[in-house]
Image 1 (tube, rainbow, N blue to C red):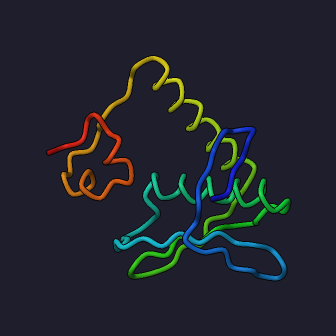
Image 2: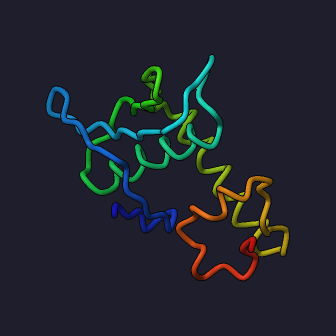
Length: 124
C-alpha cells in the first residue's frame, strides 16, 4: 500500500502505469458508467493520485477510472486535491463526533466489504 503521513491516508490503486516517466494511478471498476464518474470513485482515484505523489515524489497529472464500458481520465488539479482534503477532513470530523455508521442500503456491499470481519455493524 501507498502511504501519506500528512493526511494519515493509505491505499493501493489497481495499477500504476508509467507514461512519459510519470506514474499514473488506475482504478478498475466492475460497473458500467453512463455520463460521469461516481463521486466515491472520483475521490478514491484522487486519493490514489495524492498517495502516488507522496510515495514516489512526482505528481501525476491525472488518474484513470476504468469502467466496464469505458475509461475516464481525471485531471489531478490543485482544486481537486483541495476538495479531497476537505472530504477527508469532513469524514474524520463525522467520526470524531459520532456521526458515522453503516450507510449503505445494499446487503451485497456489506457481504463484500474488506472490513466485514471487524465491523460491529455488519449486516447478517
